[in-house]
Every structure is written in C-alpha cells, then in structure tokens.
Image (cartoon, rainbow, N blue to C red; front, side, top):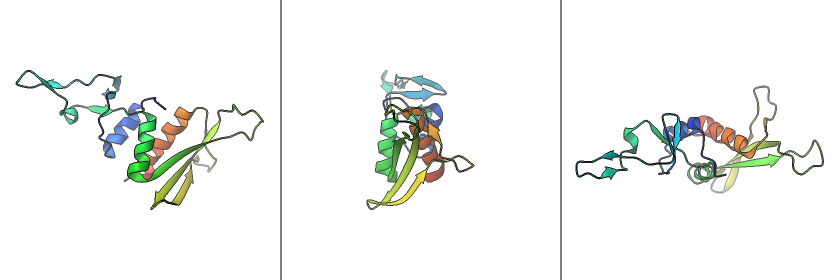
Length: 141
C-alpha cells in the first residue's frame, strides 16, 4: 500500500501526533513531493520549519498501519468476502480492527453502517483509508 493517505487523513494524523518526516505532503490540499523550506540568513534553507506552514505529511497507507500498531496497538485486517460466489478474485472486503494490550486482543470491531450492517469496500485502498479514518476519529484521543 504505497498510496499516500488522503488530505483529510493527513490532517487527522497531524492532530493525533503523527510527526514523522515524509517527503510527500499536502500544502493546503495539494499533494507535493518536494520538501521546500524557507531561506535562512546564511543563504541556506531549513527543513526544520515544517510546522510554520499549513502543511501535512502524507505517509503511505502502509506506514500509517504500522504506526497505528506500534504507537496505539491497533491492527487493521481486511477480510475478503467470497460468500457470494466461488471466484477467488472477489474484491469485496470488510474491515476488522483489533486492539491489543500486552499482546492480548482486548477489543475487536468490524466497521458497520448506522443500521449495523457490515460495510464492504471494493478496493484495499478504500478499505484501509476508511479504517484509518475510523481509528483516528473514534479510537485515538
């Protein structure tokens, strides 16, 4: 999952304390792969001024999944739905979240709609982004 997270998720990550440098970032809502800084008095530029701008790191989905696990003990699992046929190439999948404390699973959640139906996604990127957004808005204070 080498796709950068969406602008909305990048903003949530910054709010929740994700502050690892990444070469891709959003300046306002524009994804960029450059890391400009502003000029210092000695003529050089500084990368230490990240927080001076309305800029948000845009890590990849995989990097965020690892951060959620390492920092918050949350693991995201996608489970393909092959119940509607025998084709193994089905892309319909559900998202399951696991919260661990001292290596033990203490909470398991499945993303569900308001009417309690399981939410299915048609691509891994869509499913992971929904799970990440859910974790950042509901599970991390």
